[in-house]
Length: 308
Ligand code: GLN
Image (cartoon, rainbow, N blue to C red; front, side, top):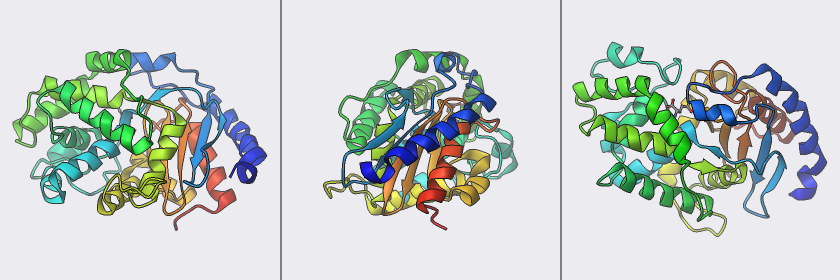
């Protein structure tokens, strides 16, 4: 793996880095403005050898929306498909991730999919646990298992920063409570949601989680970490809604199941091949890592990774 990717990947990272100039850090969560906008990194894990990384791969960052696929997997394991999809639909929206419009437009008022904020909040309300802290402990234990990294935790400063400014997510949650989609206390739900989004990882953690999804739920030792069906459902949502309202374009240009977050991470699962983790905090106007998307385009083309 190292020989195969070595200098080529280094060159692709530097080509992609130029694009960081055209992006912008997310600033609606104040703590995210501390990142270096010119950072760009990639890790690739194919289960055969050690993880191969290039660029600023030592930088840690928060999962943000990438956490949505992890809560979805845990909720599916906890409750099964019927219960989960009673609360949230399966259709892409074509709207920004935090949009409120389709919540009211569709009857019954359930969110269209688990990758938009409304849907993710509904899924988070299904995670078992007596309190926000108990839920986040369970989720972190699950992410540790998926990544093989026992030292993961959440960044309290980022969680608090989002909690204090999450009025749009609050309004989505209150709307859903009024319509019976969720029943729990909204502030407790927001407390959990902002902590799940603030779980801190590296590119390598993302690549290793991506590998498990790519490998039908099994880790590199062949141990099933999540059921194959759950891995399949999660990967399907990654294709149809993982890059928000850029998912169609991403499917054409890159063609890999992927989920992005506004801290600049992208988790990719190339079915039966590898997991890829990306970090590049400068975002395009849709909230995806601008250099990260470019880098994935280069990697997918060079190694013929498109699933289409
Ligand atoms: N925590 C962020 C939010 O809810 C996650 C959004 C994202 O990464 N797109 O706004």
